[in-house]
Image (cartoon, rainbow, N blue to C red):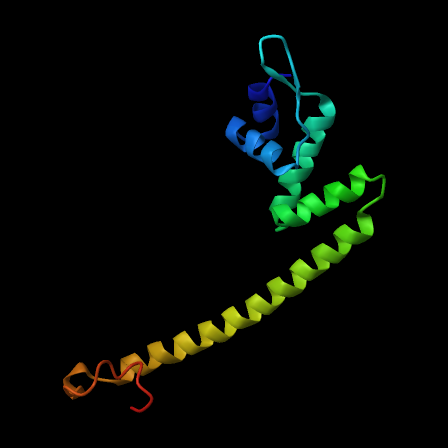
Length: 133
């Protein structure tokens, strides 16, 4: 298939496919006498894997490592599981941080309702965010 057909099948763009080729994530395609790139089903499957891995939060470097393992004849399932577990742990930590930030913002909003702008002095920048009421 041609690059446009591959892009359509994978739900991506031709420049993205060329970018993945330059990064070494996709193999150099065969070229016809006219210079057009020709892709096979294996490349489409590999591109689908790359897109799914990105959707799972993996970086291109991590994806490249998985593909290298596979290209070397190794089954990368344990490596993928470890990466995904790490992503989930990171996500949970960020969610805790965001929950703490949300609680802090809620307190600031409550504080803003208790304070009157008329009570601000010229020395105050904004009493909502200052350490004292």
